[in-house]
Length: 57
Image (tube, rainbow, N blue to C red; front, side, top):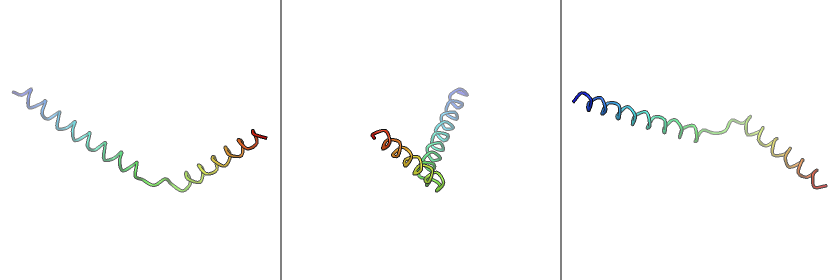
């Protein structure tokens, strides 16, 4: 009997942890990209485009 109660508690804890992890992950996914990272990505894209343009010449 105690084993069943313990198993049920562990299952409820696992479910709660799972739900919390999903919620936190979803919040992180929906978070806006900071401007400095966006600017960095744009610079890297420009560098790649420039390198590809020079390689084709």
